[in-house]
Image (tube, rainbow, N blue to C red; front, side):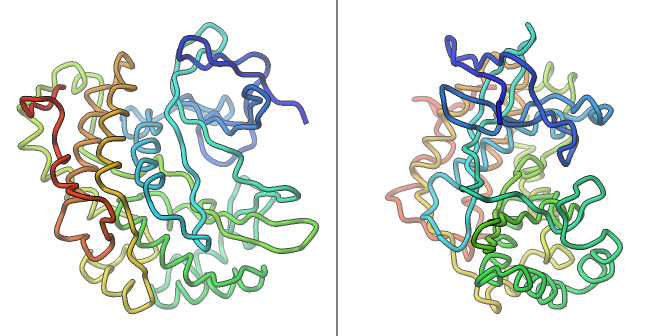
Length: 335
C-alpha cells in the first residue's frame, strides 16, 4: 500500500501526493503517510472533505493542541503493557501550498493487525450496532457498563480487559476526555488476522482538557493577567465534563469506583512532564493559536497538581513542584 510522501523541511512537514482516508471515523482529515521511509499516522487540524465544517470553537478546530499536551503525560508515564497508549507529537504541516497543523504518531497497528471499533455509524469494522451499544453500554449504570464492555472484549479474545477499561476510565477522568462514552468508535481494538488475538488501544485525545470557549476574538484579546482568574474554572471544566465510563458520577465518586475495581495509579515523572510542556509551548509559537495553547498547558499543570486527582497518579520524579508554572526567570506566564 502506498501512502502520501512526507519530509521535514526547516521544521515543517511537507506532504506530497494524495492524502487522507475520507471514510475514516470522525470529522478530521487524517490518514497514513510515508515519513522518511516509515509509516506514520497524521491527523490534521482540517476538516475531512466528506464531513462538512468544524464548530467555531478552538477546542474543536485545533484538537492537535490537546492531543500533544496529553501525550506529554503518556510519554512520561511508566509503560503498562496491558494499557497500550498512542503517543502523538505536534507538527506544522504544508500541504498543497497551505500551512496547517496537526499531530503525527507511529502506526499503532502491528504486523497482521487491523483496526476495529466497538460501534460506529461510519465504519464497517465494528463489533456491535449503535442500537445495541445504546441499550447495553450507554444507557446503563457504571457497574453494568463495565461488565458489558468486559464481556464484549472477552468474546473477541482480549486478555485482562478489565484492567484496560479501568485504567482508560481513570485516564479519561484525569484528562477530562469528552469523547469516549458518547463516541463508541473510540473503543478501539487491534485484531490480528493471523493469530486471531485482539488487544485494546487507548488513543484520540483531541477532546481532552476542554477549557473555556475559545474563538478568534479570545485569541486576539486575551491578556496574561486573565489566566490567574480563569485557571480554576478551566480545571473545574476538565473535572466536570469527562465522558468516561464513570462520567455519571462526581469526580470523588468516580475515583472511588475506580479504586474499588482495581485501578492502579499512573506512575508519572512530573518533573519531565512539566519540562516537556514548556518545550511544547515553544512549538506553538507562530501558529495563530498560541494563547489558546498556553491556557491549555497551564490547565494541564494545574490539573496534575490538584488535590482531587492525587489518588490517580504517583510522582516518580524529584521536586516536580519546582517546575509548576515556571515559564521564565521572573516566573511570569507569557501569553
